[in-house]
Image 1 (tube, rainbow, N blue to C red):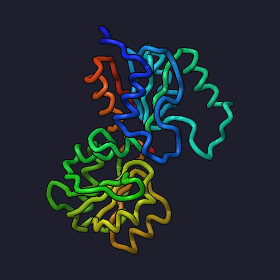
Image 2: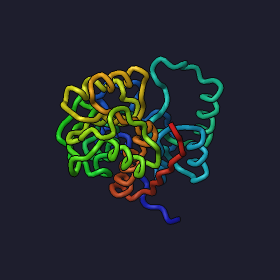
Image 3: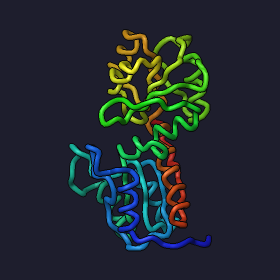
Image 4: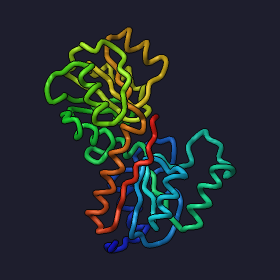
Length: 254
């Protein structure tokens, strides 16, 4: 495959940090360049999570960098580089591959982010934000629908069977959503006046809240709702810098 021009690692880092406004977010992990590799970047492999499987793909593709939503060095996790952490890092360092990771900044971006990309795929009109750091989105479906039909549509597009808590016949004229593990945003979503809240995961207490408040809840899959932001960001980088960027979806049912 013919490669385009290379970009300096530091120029790429500065561009991504600025584009995604990384510095303004209080996050659970460092955003930006997490592991330094070679200086010039010609080929990037994108994916949801910096797993061993994605690292092996990046090595196979002779990538200069990985770009992910879920990177490393999370707060409250064991910081020792042993076991699977050592194996992952050893492979990355041995092949001089950069690791870029953007968590909340990639959820929140108004066009390239996970939530904006969900709206694009389902035709939802974005009308505002809610929740801590304005990560959650609120808006309107293309036409009023029913909670059951909305869940069915999401399952068809995302390739997962979502869990619907609430009356399938509930009318939905206003939607609140936040990708990934945002079930704790339920009360903030309720305050927006939405008829349904959509996220990736569900917790035990979320079921009770949905039943007691009457607002439907759709858990559509953490991985499934967070595939599209990093993919869109990769396309943007390819167009902006003329470099080779490939999105690789490592299947994950969660």
